[in-house]
Image (cartoon, rainbow, N blue to C red; front, side, top):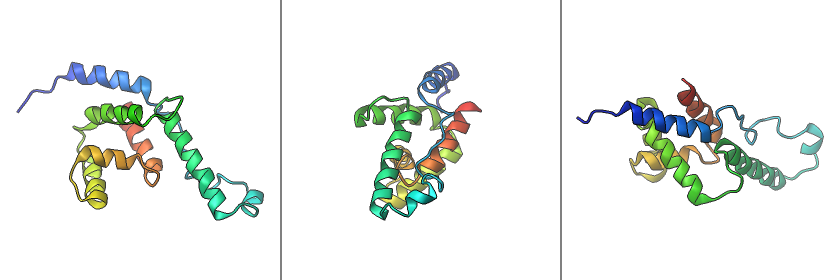
Length: 133
């Protein structure tokens, strides 16, 4: 079994902490994201469009990005994976989502899924907790 280089992990974690906003609160999934008076005049499609825009904004803020760039986002998720891949609880979640959604046991695909619209509001607090512990 390979010996884990803890200095490298600490360096990677420090770098990633500087690029991951652990203090950010996701807004797209909040039940109170719309004022009651607005709910009455917006269609379901308009509300979903707004929630999608808020989700994209949440992703940008969480990863400290100015503009959405899928290549950069994937690189950041890969860097995160390299830091958290030894955490058994997070690996189990990644494996679960990957298996359920793609039929694969690829943990890194599971992490990408965890940052999708359906799971970001759950994933972000878990990752933030891991980073700050």
